[in-house]
Length: 74
Figure 1 (cartoon, rainbow, N blue to C red):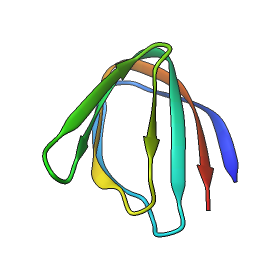
Figure 2: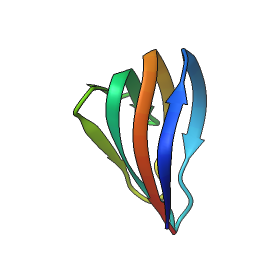
Figure 3: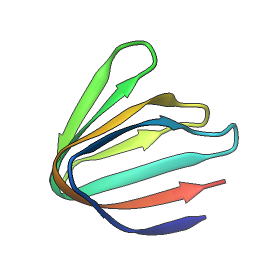
């Protein structure tokens, strides 16, 4: 398991969780949107979080300067 505080300006990239990976993140400031491989998406802001199950695939987009915490387990 590992975790940290993470910061990022506007950006966009693909994400893919491995078969044994899981991630939970909580937005402290800013806003982001996560699109799944099926075309759905969730947008979260300060005080909200998302969970990525194993084998999740999609795209992560930072909409506003983002500060969040995350924890990944393997």
